[in-house]
Length: 163
Image (tube, rainbow, N blue to C red; front, top):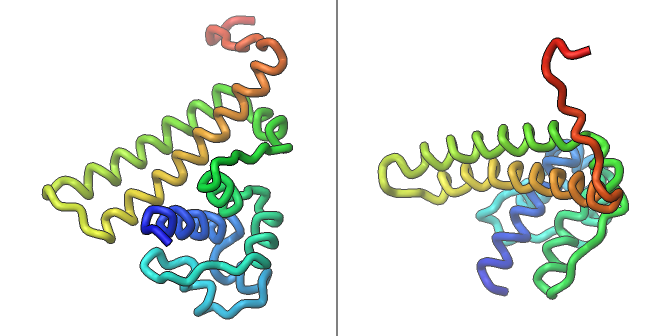
């Protein structure tokens, strides 16, 4: 198993655990021990989730994070039946969320590279906001896909004070 694949899977597992409510909630949902779930959540630990908990957690949070990585590694892409739901949050709010997440990513990366050396811990502190930014960009792309499928929509921007 190559290191890049392992890092991607571990990052997807951490995101899945986070989106499912954290370690203790995952313990409740899967029946696995706190220490086992902690190992899944630890990027430095090689333990990978079994298929059963992946299915349970992806269904619970509504995101096929680990399955998406597995598909991508095999040259495939997943489609998401929830695109319309996510697009409902609106293009402008999706853009605002991307900007916010990118700001957090830039802040974390700036702090990590300030001394000219990035430690493994600092790398992890960059990865978390990068994952959040990736999620925000995915939501933005879903909103844009719906707009394209509908043949475009009115932006709905108005000047403040306009009736």
